[in-house]
Length: 414
Ligand code: SF4
Image (cartoon, rainbow, N blue to C red; front, side, top):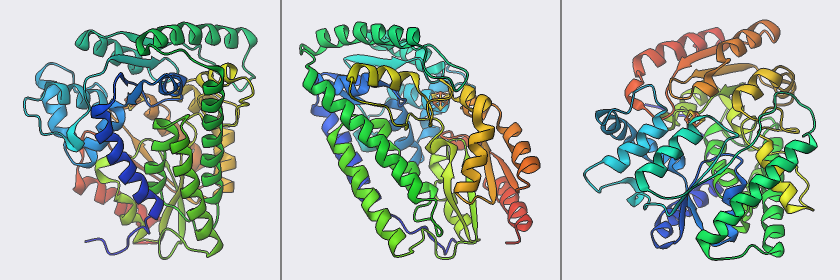
């Protein structure tokens, strides 16, 4: 029985209510696109064309939080989807293939169009191509080159992605029956940029001691810049959260009652056990930061004076501070060392939890190298755990408890 709880943000409650409303409204919204949660400008652009957007990845998180992902993964596996496949995808196909219609939040309706982008993981292409065949609906794919290092975006990359965007916009205009106007593009680029600004502000505020937010709050709030990008509504939600967090900082209110350790978490949190942060809170540990909260999303400041260029750069930039790598693994490999050093210093980190995730190989690649780096270079204690982000069937309470206890002993909190 956990006695210490993370002090949840009021604005996180507002967000939960907003998410419920979004899932209700999606049933009366046409045309509807299914898309990927990535720095995917097709989401921003579709919305201004009047195409509503739903996210099977986010829906997998909803199912997982309600402990139903195991059921959907089992159904998908019975239809020969391999257990090695990402659990978000198995959840999605399990949901589609389930016989009963009793789904969390009522489910998500069939799409009219599928949107994807190649800047994330390979599954974004294979999964959405499979959905194209399943629904027999058009797939609009934004192809982006991948960059390895922190150089400015070469001009020919930018030209290529702008051309790609133009082709995608042409298809989306035909599907929606609407024409894209310059004014709407400028508005969406503005909201996209402003959301990045408020997200960075939230992270900046969480450098304060005591940390005003725990990982669970931030992991929920990331829904906004990833799923409501380019919208005034999303910006308002982020502003509300930033004002509340600012207030906590002013009043020196921490997310947990007694902060003694500040940990960084790597990889996607297990959505079915997001309350694991409370187990750490009991031992005075807060998580002010995680790689999932910044390194993997486009949260850098991108000029919006030319909206087309803004969105092309957004697609090309997957990560903070100029977009180091265009995929998560590239980001991890090419630059995590330096950025990590800065974040460890700025967030006053004194320990790390690294999840090795059977589903998400791309987020787990390099995880053990980072563990070694943190232990050897920064001389900080590291806990490595094996947890799938959505497939709860692989989770062992007893095993995880043993690992947690050993870690708490190391940091003097046994
Ligand atoms: S493998 Fe990882 S990045 Fe790819 S869809 Fe699954 S969770 Fe997302």
